[in-house]
Picture 1 (cartoon, helix red, strand yellow):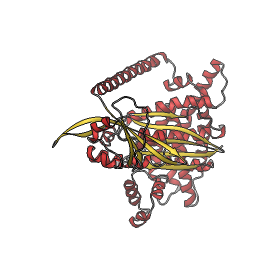
Picture 2 (cartoon, helix red, strand yellow):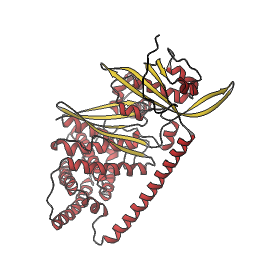
Picture 3 (tube, rainbow, N blue to C red):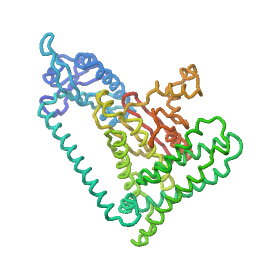
Picture 4 (cartoon, rainbow, N blue to C red):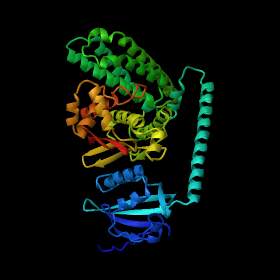
Length: 486
């Protein structure tokens, strides 16, 4: 095998470079730096995985093995690959002397080069992490923690100030939203109140064939879940609590084989209570708008930008409740030019997918530590445009979909036999999570466990003429993408 000349710009003399064709080393540079970890000088023709196996623990090696497969798949997103890199900062076992080993920290960075729709080569940059770097990182982490504590104190102080200054019955959540963009709140109220009126009509007509009753129940579940998600974004906690209580009453009906009119008794009064609560907000907004002399602004990119900041707060809020550390990363969504006719529905679906990513996707801090990941998980929200269509994606760097758990839930539901499940392909199993009432959550809470969110997303996307796609790799990531015609 002929040595290929490498001419890559290096960060410093301590960085070594390996060039890979699939997993075989075809060239190297700065072998002195590489020797500090691999204890050899000649790498040509060697397997990169064999090199890693000598210095990594079994769990890290297996993740690196999976990662290399993803790296060589040309369709995989470059930014995603950077984020899920299991060797960004890893501990390696260095042979100091015969029978003596020491642990050292190293950084592995990977860069792909693509030619003619295939990965032509992969460059691996290997750099030892100095103690000073670790100290600087530790200090930076502590600085971030201190900043977060300071921000929390400011937020608590702001809340106390708001409560003291609010002499009327105006909810604090509404006063905050009024400071941002009233049109977002107005749109929510103008859509939600009529939607609840439709549910009242359906409940008053809850007679007929079993299939009709089941269809109405599914429709009611989706509608309530959608309104709850939209209300949560606006911090309408009172409304969210009422809707959650309503879902508690609906849940026993979802698994019932025979529905009858008496099953829906009491729901009309609950919906009227929710409508009354929303109308209070409506009155407050109209008075505030009249006082400011404002007219309703057009919904467009400004509202999308306003909503992105609220989505960040929403993710942070659920993360705290779930005792997780998660950041929401913008990948072009904030500047998205979503057609006006699709905005409301699309943004509602984004809320559902973000909640799903926080609750189901991103692992707990302990789980991420066991998986050798950063303690803070990442959710990417982005938009990609093509000729005649656009795609919105929500991608997390979490645990990925667990096929074993999906199989267990499917069999436990009683709808499928073990033989039927064993014959299903991975894609068929993934589609189970889109079914109404299907959930892998261990318990029901405000955010998960009813099996409605993804059913709502799938139904809505199809209704808008779009397509929902799921990409996942167990232990690494899950991505939901919604593609719509322009």
